[in-house]
Length: 205
Image (cartoon, rainbow, N blue to C red; front, side, top):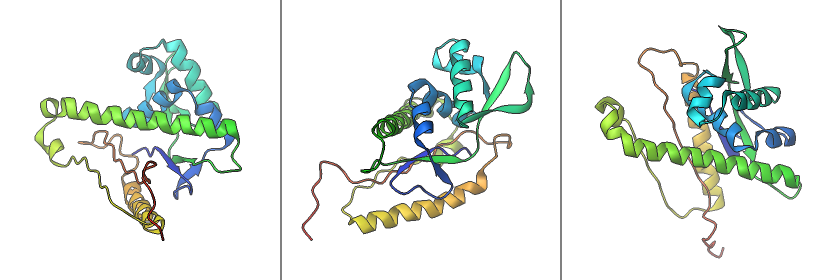
């Protein structure tokens, strides 16, 4: 399992917060798409990525090198040749902190863009699953699938309690890291969002 980004005021355990330089380096739609594909598919070459994103291999090579300079990706040791290098995402997750009063404006805008792009990628995966899963996946893979949304009224403290429960569950997910070569395994995504709806109003205390 490759953990992805987390957007939070307080970074979850094991998700290092991105600094301003990393935020600005990642704030490019194609770089986010490349990072997301390496998380989903495992190691790929620049040519393989180019086919998936509809760009030239020269373009994906350039962005891979840029991501590598900021420790988002790395070359796969002992795989490939000097002409055809394989790339993988650096293990572990990262967090994009919600902006506060002390956040640099450019870093704040970059963080917002990064979170928006990752969320758009998640939405596309769900839509692809809904469109194609019934005809393309065997029943054993459909049986365990769940798409759920819970809408409820919570206090800020209760919402934090729910988020803390997810972080405890995240520790369980870490048991399954490094299974890219496990027989019978395939890429799976697990989504969890908890946030206050912006157009809602808080009840008087």
